[in-house]
Amino acid sequence: MEREKIIAVAGADKRSQAMKAALQAMGYQTVSLDERDKALAAVLPMPYTLDGKTVKDTDLSLEELFGSLGKHFVILGGRLDAKAYCLAMKNGIRLFDYYDQEAVKIKNAALTADGTMAMVPVDLGIQLCNARVLVCGFGRTGKALANRLRGAGAAVSVSARKDTDLAWIEALGYTAMSFEKLDVSEFDVVMNTVPARILTKKHIACMKKNAAIIDLASAPFGTDFDAAKEYGITALTAPSLPARVFPDKAGAVLAQSAAGLLKEAGCGI
Image (cartoon, rainbow, N blue to C red; front, top):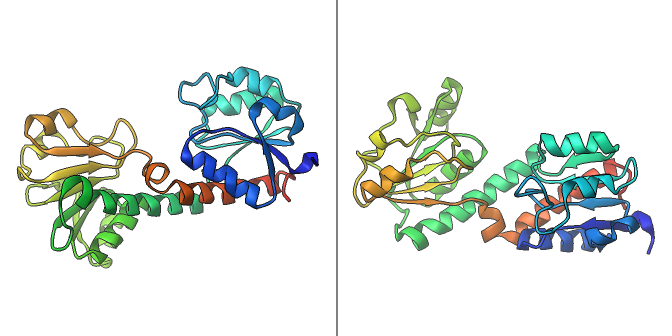
């Protein structure tokens, strides 16, 4: 095999496997991390580690991985943190984050919104047509969700903190609500995208008994789940929806980003 076409790929989940298949379809030949000495670059899963010590889905320690590679070796990973960059600097590794691109995050948000739309009738038994839905947060996922909810016939309100976001929410035809004046008492479904405590016990106590919450934020989430349990409100978390619901599409998005970075690093085909 020509070394310039070989990349070592890790990751056992369906999204990682789909990313690997997409890279192979582009012409790359893949090997495991155990055969990284044959490769010019390595592609790690997203997130690249779960415990801060080993590469996700392997027994290989981060220290061993970064220490075993020659200077200027290229490593790609998803949602890299300070530890990864420190190890790369220490060992002379060139490190790139394939998730740290706006286009990738937007596409991921769109897949998250699509997955959420599928959850509501299946997991909650709620039909969105004519339902009153509140989306908390107007970032990438919030924007994608609001658009899809309106298309499904829901009455959509969106809450945000910034005046500019509230102005855009109104300009786009949604009902705007500031976090400071958050009132969830009349909604059938509340969808949170903010990774900070937005839905407190005070808010949840006022919700309709047959209402539900879907929290799409990363940990520690934005919902007081103890309060939801206390008041009998169904509250679901939905982490990593693209990887769970649309692994092939999510993997293809990451592969496209990874391929661009490999080309930028001189490892492209």
